[in-house]
Length: 120
Image (cartoon, rainbow, N blue to C red; front, side):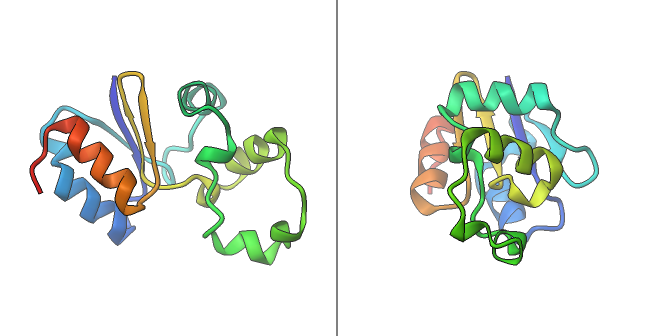
């Protein structure tokens, strides 16, 4: 399966979508703001990524607002928070077969491009 969980209003997601040509490569695109990620979808991503923490964004404004940086979060906490608030999911999250690429870090995007055969 080729799927991208993203925010359509996020310029970083838009840039990565354009750079990887995911829209032209048969990806299913899911805007997580208008179509929330389901528990089953999140669990599938966790199985491939290894943990819910790997899918969790500490850049979300609510992370600081809720004082989460001062708390010891468990895997159950990460799962609950992502399901409650879409901004806690790293973005974009790309499911490519058995691989998951989460976030917008350069090495992650470069790995996705390599997996897709996209030349920089």
